Length: 433
Ligand code: HSE
Figure (tube, helix red, strand yellow):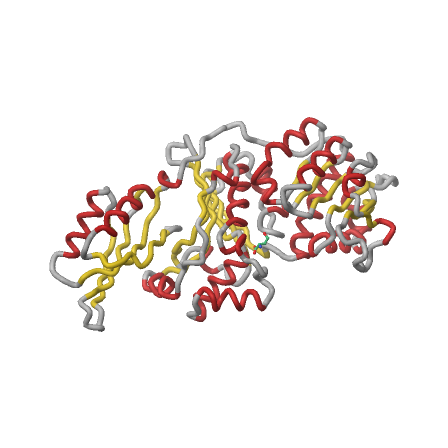
């Protein structure tokens, strides 16, 4: 039976995502009410610039006092789409203290201090939902937290940043260099004026921390995630990747160690075989590949950013939280019972593609192979191309078997010291095999 008293939603932030949340709440009000079992009403919208015209939103709902809004006491759900650490954290914890549940899209805050938010939610008997914080519209947090709660997840590997996927896809499909592809991404509105958070991997690292924490039931913070951006990827790297039947993606990879005693989380560019499902994720799309013990391999794919897609994820959470409230229940809280340590990057075991500029003379290949052997890194394939410029140099491309990252770093350091190695042109991890 439909309850007539509406559930009240307060919106913190009315930008690209917030305005779409408000629009869909209004236009789909009847459907949302039917699905929840009670009407849901926009009770207030906190903004920084109250003078901006916001079509479809009653001006009487607009306020600049977000703190007063979350303290009202009659709010059921606070939707936080302002981002950043503060004032978002203070507003969310204040909302819990005043009897509201929270739906947030704030990946930075969840990755940096999710534990504080979870603790406050639990203390006050409220829900904390955040489907929109990772991979926009793609249902991923709820499948990991709920649908796969009976399984054991061993690996989560994904493309969780659309801007960088767009740039890498352009480089791959057109042969463009990084700067040219970035310029196109900026012109088309995919990249922000300051693209640092995306291209240096900070955005993806925050998402990796959140995914690893949920997947492995342990606390993983942003600082635990190894991070390399993709600004150094070159057209030559793509040419090398193609020769190996691979492409290059910026991947977020969360893994349980083989002995099950620790986990790792990392973000870096990597070659993946064209046959891997993530290789066919084009343009600004996101996709996350999950490997679970019983379920096997699962792939989640879709738009990872943008107003409407992100609002879809937010509203799914609003519906879930409202249903919980009507049932006087709460959904899943923090699950960090395993308390597994997060190992450093040096412990990660993977394969490597290393491109060296070497002197083209007898004994060089043997010298290089010896350095790999001394560091316990086994070589899978070697390709050598003599240069046609008469400079007596050759390009040597070595692909290794799986080895610890620390062993590879030691190998590269030693290679750089060889007189016959003129330069290390690129080092790229090889994943997904
Ligand atoms: N800037 C992100 C991306 C979207 O390009 O995917 C928000 O996380």
